[in-house]
Length: 325
Image 1 (cartoon, helix red, strand yellow):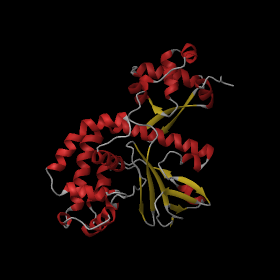
Image 2 (spheres, one colour):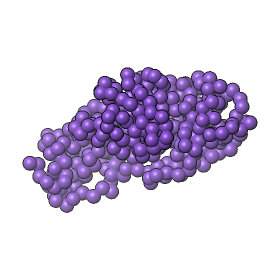
Image 3 (cartoon, helix red, strand yellow):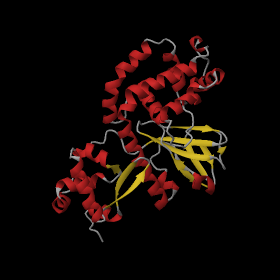
Image 4 (cartoon, helix red, strand yellow):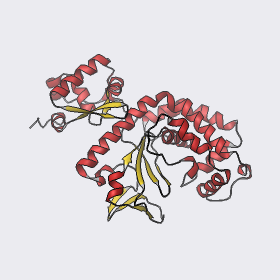
């Protein structure tokens, strides 16, 4: 198994990060595989897969390039540059520039590793980084950017929930659900996958955790400075909260609409997300949130550009039918 050696300072200085490029690479993986792990992603895939396949069909170089870059067991490193952890104003254009600026010989070396064999003759050329960046721009502009505000809300909600759990229950709990083979092993060892990779000592480096909404994850590093675990976040675009079951007693206590908001806040969500999930108007959702806040059933905190609401311990007890204690 592959694992990283860390220390207390590495964990203390680690942070969660939002990466539009990582979200786009995750979307590219879904498009390339043509399968989706949950219904919401399936609907998105049905909308965009025909155009993606048409885009590759008209480009005899980019199609084999992406097949090689996504590989069988490893993604070419130049396609997944390690985020800086700084959520600056540049956003996606700044991140994708790192792909475009890859040296051609470095890109070919990465492709040899991801493909696990010799490169097709068509890939012995120097414009591979440019072609990869152009495809990522196409995926971002056509399939990710239109829904980026909602995607970002789901990502930020995952960050808030995991950070709170890590603070309450420790890193082992925060790592749960980050993907197969990722867990805290003890003795300052962080398992990152199930492959027979040699361990890496990352003491002194910045460790980043990067959630994405597609059901794909990977690891990357810019040794010796930054290491990142990209993982599928717990909230998904498939979450259609209007169908959530509201316990009858809870609905009688709070009213069905307000109870639905409380039930949905089992994972942190923004006002905009709640409006989309419940079908209620912004004013109605805002009033429900104010009542729940005043009752101490929910709390709120800022995460990046969003304000996220979450259930307090009292709210958890009420939602579970245990009473407020």
